[in-house]
Image (cartoon, rainbow, N blue to C red; front, side, top):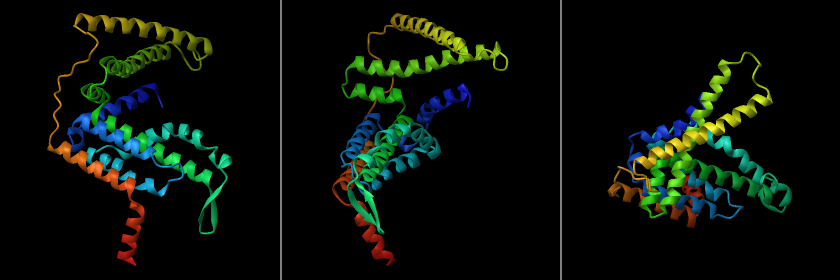
Length: 269
C-alpha cells in the first residue's frame, strides 16, 4: 500500500462527515455528549461482563446505518489498532486462572472472561469514537467542545494537532515522491537516506508551521478558532438524545439479553 493511499485513508474519515443524513444533521454537542455517556456506560461494567455488553452494539450499528457509513471501513480501522487491546488483556488468562463459568461441560477461567470483555469494550468505544468523527468531523467536535465552555486554548491545540497532521503528511508525500524520482530500484533506501529525509521533513514542517502561524496572526488570530456555523438544538436532536439515553439506561440497569432470550424462547418454542 503506497503512502498516497494511506494519506487518502486518513482523509476519508473526514470526507464522510460531509454527507447529508439524519445523523450528520444532528447538533454536534448532542452527539458528543451522547457519545461520552455511551463510553462511560460501557466501561462502567465489571471486567467479567460479556453478555451484558452485547446489546450496546445496537448503537454503533444504528449510527452506521442511518449515517450511511461503510461498515468495512470502520472495521478495518478498529482492527488496525486492536493489537493494543490484545496486548493489554493477553496475560489475563495466565494471571487470573479462577474458574467462574461452565458452558457445555467446558470450564472457562476468569482471565478469559476479562480478556473477552476488554476486547468487546475496546471495539465498542473505538468504533463509536470513529463514528462520531465520521458523522461530525474533527473540527465539528472541537467546535462543539468550545460551545460546551471548554477552554479556548485547549480546543485550539486540538484543532492545530489535527490540522498539522495533514500538513506533515503532505510534506512527507512531497519528500517521498522526490526521493522516488531520484532513485532507481533499491538505491536510495538505506538508513542514511531515511535519516536525511527525517531531518528535511522536520525543517520543512517547522518552516511551514511558522508561515501558517504568521498568516493567521495577520488575519486577526487571537487564540480562539471561530466558526461560521451556528449550532441550534432542534426537536430531532432532543429525540435522538432521549432515545439514546433510554437505551443506555435499559442496557445498563436491566438484563436486556436475558429478557430478549426469554421473549424469543416464548415466541418460537
